[in-house]
Length: 432
Image (tube, rainbow, N blue to C red; front, side, top):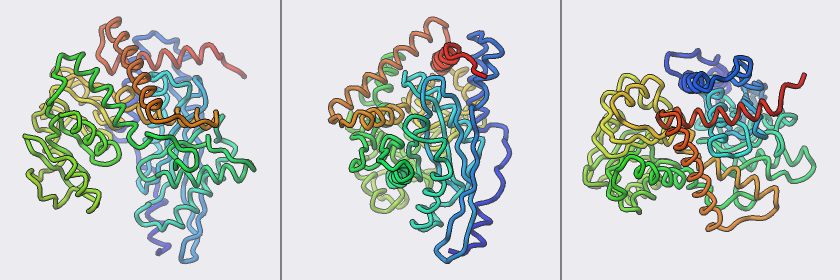
């Protein structure tokens, strides 16, 4: 690896906020919920800030012998409900504002799902595609060692993210265990099953989305079978969800990845599509019965359900009027911007919010942590039954708030989350 381009690419300053960042999307919803709940201004000021924002330097010896010093972050939002839980991101385009938003989303998600944990998020500013496996491992281990006083099974538990797979979680677990002088498998979730990882972890988000989708269809008087569905994203979440919904008998008419989208009004051959992507690394070049279209074009196609599972702000103010779905279910973090949310609500398109819909991964992380603390692994039927229970109870609690306050589902979920976290903070009190 060439050291100079590496350092130049990875050590640039964190970009400033723009008009519709994930942080602004998250805070807009939180501000409205706090106002409606009438939270005391002093309590509100505490909840509105992250508990801690940690920045560390991560020196890494490159394969060519040069030394590069990367930036690493860990944002811990609120510990009112319990120890922190959140992902590690490995990205050359890492933004501190996005980590703040993600940490807060994790807090609200845990609260909605009634999981006794608070939210956190961290990252290393590194490009995994331009980094060797050895360099990546050295960066992750040094980053973990630098945070040893701030993480662990009783304090801050790491979870995987797009570029931080189960092998990265294994490195973190081993580093923590080496410093602790005993195995600390509960320090991370999403790790290999051989190291205490849980069954069902890979499809957890998709299976949770499936539970919520069924409940939402009943709520909005929509057919339960043979729906036309568009999914933005074909990876771990979008691809798994497409497979599950195809098996349920729905018509997955469109699916996309970063290079483009496939569309067939009569429904795609999802097993063939996913097999092609597995073999070739993308949807590009698939020669089945479908049209190759752009990602933006896919979002505007008519459908019963649109499920964005890829990036934040995929549906924004500029394209919100082109959405032709009867229902939007958020599979990614913040895929509908604050301004777009208002447009869709005004147009009568209901939205199932991310902190409720895509919570299956958080539930499985909690399950894995519990199993590790118990030293006892659950079987697949037990995990799936408990996942359905957590998702259903979260839906029922959100729906109850929706009806009692006469608000939409996003506001109901935010009210429920903020109320639970505020209550925990009030009961704990302020220690000085």
